[in-house]
Image 1 (spheres, one colour):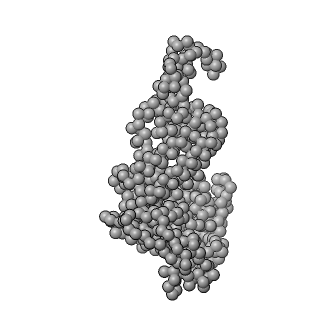
Image 2: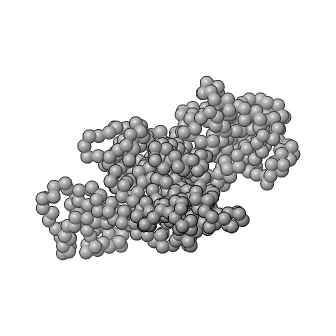
Image 3: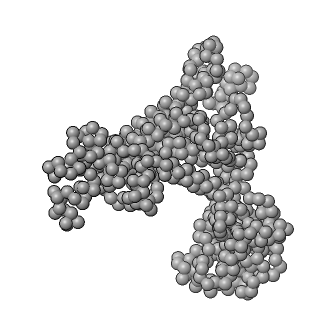
Length: 538
């Protein structure tokens, strides 16, 4: 491969990119530990085989069992968690909210780097059953996360991990691994057809599970229920950077200004678009008005909200609007398209490599096709923002039609009236799939938390608590106040009752009351006579 005619060394000479054989590494991937691995001699340099080698941040071993990299990743996570612990203390340091943000943006990505290669899913999404592949690693990652939880909340080391996870709003170790692997598979499944991984993952999804020689992608596709053939494709360079916007846009500064701009519009042709999500279904509609008279309406049913988003429906509404302009003979130009979603208007003017933006490129192509067909310029089509629920007849009609298209698939417009790009089922939205998986993980987390023996105690303190409510509650507090609050809620606080239970105090009696009462949280806050003055002030 290196020294043959047309090989690597010949290529390096032709392209002035010389290789250094002394920097080469040799590793023989085999399950036979007794197999002899001879050295390799390249241009006089002897390259001895090694059992492991670090490549692109991942430690490869001969058997591809990833034990060395697992130990390396967990040790790295523990090291970063300890560094995080040094930044904050129970009485001072970085506030809770910022500490949690540091953990999510630094420690977790560092620990789970390239997790799709060396980790397996912890749950099977199709059957909702736990898997054994990475159980031990998940427990070790959860142990390292506990160090970060103590640093984030300021709780005592005797505090239970599940209670700290609820207060810090951090997924348990197995669910955290599941989310990371799912997002990785989603990213791989959305690669364009010319990417090297696309045919591999597509072939794996098509053939189904295999019994022997499973790769990391086999485990991901088999257990995470993601089909690359039905997932939307995100091209890294969807449009030329110098391409111009073939239409004009206008977004008013307020709702009142948007209504005033609508009443000042002099164009005879107006199209109102809208996308809606109702009862778990998503639909889009576009209504054509000429001289304020309703002419025609197109409706499209996208599917479930676990597979499509409202943003995607708004983009479909723009495509339906262009179909009305291309197919109806009554339209005149310039024409104005009104949408009540500012995000889709801004993205339509400058679409990028993001989920759902491929529909905006289709919309732009239809606008260019209309320019060529009618000999128009970029000022002939105006895309304006219209305030929703402002008693504007056309906008209210588009809203009702979009909800009708979402509720009933049989109310969609006939296939022959739709543009060619909408006559087939649209690929699944990456954003919707991630959100559905996130909801599934939080539901499983809630089930595990309700089965915990700590749940009745926390539920008695705050029956309305969710995983996000506590962080909102203490977001403005200093670290020492948050630490005391967490200790009071969990019951693991340096009072004699708890200290005696963990064998750190000889008695559980309150020293301020000369041993007549047990020093509990309730006694400290409501009964202890030593703090009667402070209690009276509060």
